[in-house]
Amino acid sequence: MRSNSIISTNYLKISVVVATFNRRESLKRLLESLLQQTLSQAFFEVIVVSDGSTDGTVEMLHQIQGHFGSLKIIDLMNRGPGAARNAGARVASGDFLAFTDDDCIASEDWLEQIGLVFERTGAVAVQGRTTTDRLARSPLTHQMEILTPQPTTLPTCNVAYAKSAFEAVGGFDESFTFAHNEDADLAWRVEELGKIVFAPTAHIMHPPRRDLFWKRACWVRFLQSEFRLYYKDQDKYQKYRSLSPWWNIYWNVFVVGQVQMIKSNCKYLIYPFKPQYFIVGIGLVAARWINLIRFYPAYYNAYRFYCKRTPANGHRNS
Image (cartoon, rainbow, N blue to C red):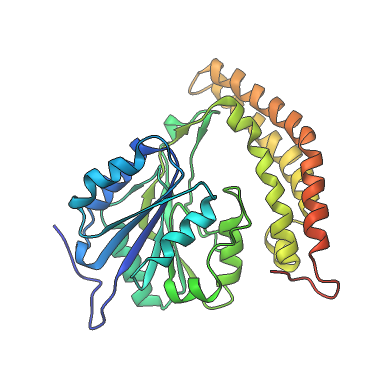
């Protein structure tokens, strides 16, 4: 049963923006969940940006386009997640921009709850609750679980912005070419415009997504973007993240994070008893340790590059 309860005397419309790259089947599941929204399709649109997909994603989108009140399709050359989301935001006609990822599933009242929170609170951004299937996790799966407020990160799997605030700060910084830290950077800029609220009723499911071993092991290459984030706003980086990118990489990740991974993998020797997961998990820890050393030159080059762009008389840099 559909509801228009978020519509009062003012017209309100939400634009859902999804960036995707070669995940046709999981994207299709997400779109099916958007078709089941309790919010009438008259009050939201869906914008899917294919960031250079080669798996038939665009063709699939054209096939199902007629099922939506408004489904806009953008096909880009591969430019990265920030550029893809900005491209979607530019053609959005809604008052609010709701972002989720192509491997997520939206609850039936996700958009309705986002609209309600914006109307009731006057927030500039809303972060929703994200859950996963804990029993389906393994060392080689990627998933997100956000059960409490993370106002200084706002992962794009479940976040919405007032379009006016998003545009006021210039959207995502497209120089973050990896899918890492572009969401935190946007959150830090938007928080200066007004309040960011956590809405547990705005629920997204992020099922565990299996990745290849090498991809999980090489994730640490994304940490190059720590230097971009740090030198954009050193004060906020030290407030919200760490003393410096070097400390974050070689203490928080190399030592603390890896030890936590070892402890987490030990559970597979007890319950659920899956010793093969334990072996893979320990191997992944070792591979990441090797890569954290191997990628040191890339980190150093990023440090040199962004350090030179920092104003001599200040802590903030765009």
